[in-house]
Image 1 (cartoon, rainbow, N blue to C red):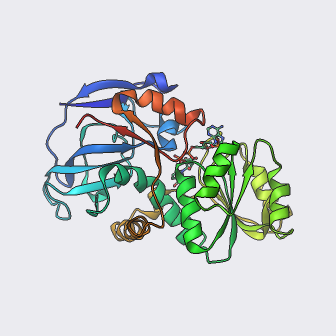
Image 2 (image 1 turned 90 degrees about the vertical axis):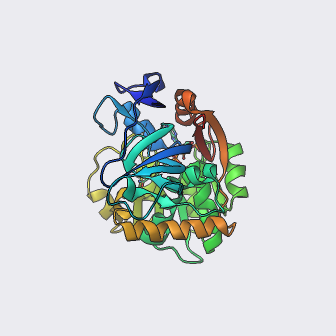
Length: 326
Ligand code: NDP
């Protein structure tokens, strides 16, 4: 038996229940993992509130770090006792112990502790693919990155600085602006008090940017398109303010033959060799100190609902983790 978070209906944080669940033996291709730390991500909110559908009742959470207790038939790349981390479906990471597909487990280097491992996988692998693959950045590029003081955001600021990229970050308060700057944002715009398009025009001397990374969605989408230079790429990778409503393709024409993509980590890390290469890149960025994983909020697993409230109401910065009683 293990303690875990379950939800039987979609809704606000109050639908999350801390319950006892049975955890069996791993079947073929599976592993049983004892989670030492669990990562909270905005995608967990989308599943909980029903924006992303899932079978119910069900578990929640894509990300954790811990120790392999047992493996099923055919599992060769991890063994009992290995320290591992993961960031992928199926939902169910909000648990002390779980049986899960083994092919999404990555061995954690000894230099990276469990909390950091649980905090870095989903958001770090996301920045990896956004910056190295979706639009491969090069030194000297100037980019617009929304929600720069959040979990993904603070990793992006540091990663951009390490690559010599000028990141223009947007944030919702002056405190968050200072935080993003300290982590490497070259410029910061408070989108609650400043005109983002106007500021991007000023900063780039009228040139605008070749790529916008927008995870805020509904509230920022159209203005993000206005920040793109002709033939620029709109990377719409999240919906923290709500889903982007349908829009006319003519919006891309009138702004200069823009491109748009709606990427997700699941696609980029679908193949085992790609996951390993992306994780190696991330581990190198963290182990070398170029990217520091900022855990600013810790909650007991039992208080996952409070953690969700904090994330949704924009009271968090950097990463939030949940801690089971190990
Ligand atoms: P964050 O820690 O960045 O939290 C979300 C932030 O979004 C808030 O702190 C807030 O910052 C900003 N925001 C703007 N409008 C709203 C709103 N109406 N409600 C709540 N927050 C708002 O979360 P994560 O780092 O976990 O994720 C960031 C985004 O990246 C999410 O949209 C997530 O879905 C997406 N994502 C996408 C992935 C992919 O592969 N496609 C993978 C990982 C994350 P502020 O106060 O500064 O405005």
